Image (cartoon, rainbow, N blue to C red; front, side, top):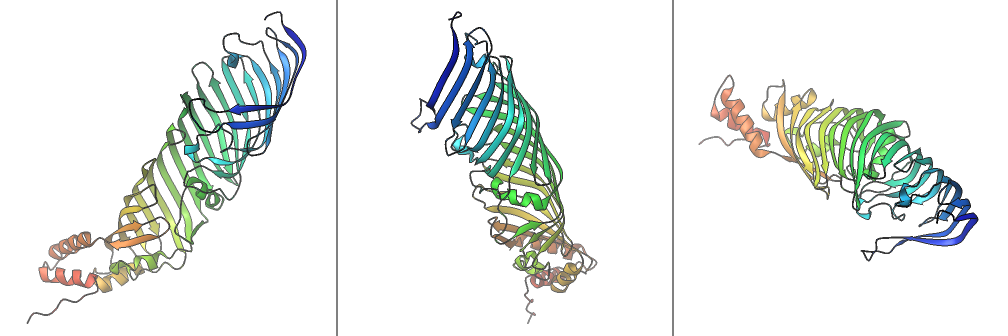
Amino acid sequence: MQNLSVAKLNVSKGRVLIGDVNTRTKPHVYDNVNITVHNFSFISQFPFTVTADLPGGGNLKLDGNAGPINPNDAAQTPLNAKLNVKRLDLAASGFVDPSSGISGLADFDGTLNSDGHVLKSNGTMKADKLKLSAKGSPAGRPVQVQYATAYNLQSESGTLSRADVAIGKALAQITGNYETKGDATLVNMKLNAQNMPVDDLEAMLPALGVVLPSGSSLKGGTLSTALAVSGPVAKPLITGPIKLVQTKLAGFNLGSKLSAVSALSGAQTGSDTSIQNFSTDAHVAPDGVRTENVNLMIPALGTLTGTGTISPSGALNYHMTANLAGTAVTGLSQIAGLGGKGGSIPFFIQGTTSDPKFVPDVQGILNSRLKSGLQGNNPNPGSAVDAITGLFGKKKKPNR
């Protein structure tokens, strides 16, 4: 075949099917495939152009030079080309694991350069209606990614040296390594983002499967995080700190919700809950979300601390403590006789992310009040019982 040469080769209106012969899943069809090659030879470089219609709509164009053909593995043939993709349907493309829940429409403009051993690529991708979670919903605004990567064709592993993800004025930077293992792609990445405007990020929360209380939204402030992302792309493990500063949960009256805990019924946060600071260490896995070292500072109430989990279905299981300050302490002291200088009330957050329920930690409150009553200036068990019954809005019956 070394002596074979073709002056011009055309394939018009072809069809390419991409699928797994070992499964019964329907293959993905690329229609209207057109290929033009000039001066083709197995032993020299030749120019080519490929165009095709994409599954779910959209189209692509690959234009460049390839060759000489690697006789042992055609994938290791040197290549220099420009790739332009319009309206790629990520879910219908056949290149995304369906179980990942990833979907959206993407435009891509970049380059591919291979020496037969390492394939380098860089470019810009813009995604609309992006969804990154099986339980998520499409994002409310587009996402742009500028990236550079190098992939070793023999080891089937690569390095992502740059991925700048922009959502409006919010910018996150991703770097790390990835490799192919069978049908799965494994990643070991770092995501760093500092002082991202919450107003730009808020539209992206549904795409990540983040559900806020019904009727509420985040307004103002900034978010910072430094996350480690590892494991299969479809089901990654994500860990790291998250911090919110000077934001508010609009449309959510935390004071009203806390009224279910009698000792906190005097808290007034208004129809919008202002958040001075929120920080936590997050652990996101396929079996749910665990957040530790939760520290939520609300000027109208005080500081809420604790830990808890969110199940894949959105069920909440949090054990929190309200460390009261200001007017919240005054109201509490009138109910439970805490002295007006400060107080800590344990409680649970249950229900779901869309409809959280605040429940008193009865045992925790009893233990706290008994300890306080017995170790105070007047260690009288009777006064401790009075404080406890007052905490739940009841009065101790007089002895007869």
